[in-house]
Length: 182
Image 1 (cartoon, rainbow, N blue to C red):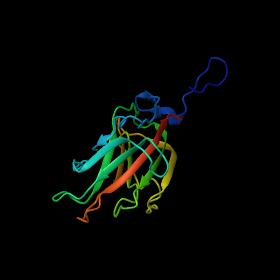
Image 2: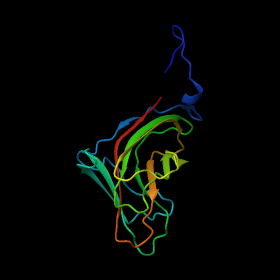
Image 3: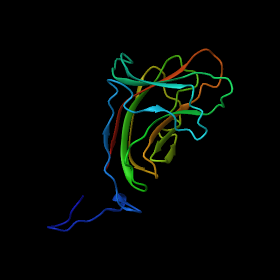
């Protein structure tokens, strides 16, 4: 906690929540041996049944130890985002957190070429990386400060759903997820 002078401590406004001090979050992903607790899910509609999440995927754009999100067209599912989530964070509602990660869209993707939402502890950020399509087959780095958390312990990534039967799965890779308390 920041302090001013000998024996005096202050609580800065961005370190406060309705219930008091913010929970400290210090997380660095490790996909070298699995999914690091990431799983399909995170949509209110619950239509992530066609998403598989796999860790320790190597040689993607020259990088190893990646998390792969693979989803394909499934008849009867609505065209919406597909989401991968990781529960278990101690986010405090109303507090800020710094988040960074890298993501990669496979060259075969038809729909998934943008990060549509990032959900931090229940607070949803629409188009957090600018809202425009990104290049396929290349790594994109994302880093932002000051994400205000909601009242949940989950981090959720959402990408566009494969909404046509084109026989090509949509594949997104994620790596180096880092969350820290400012």
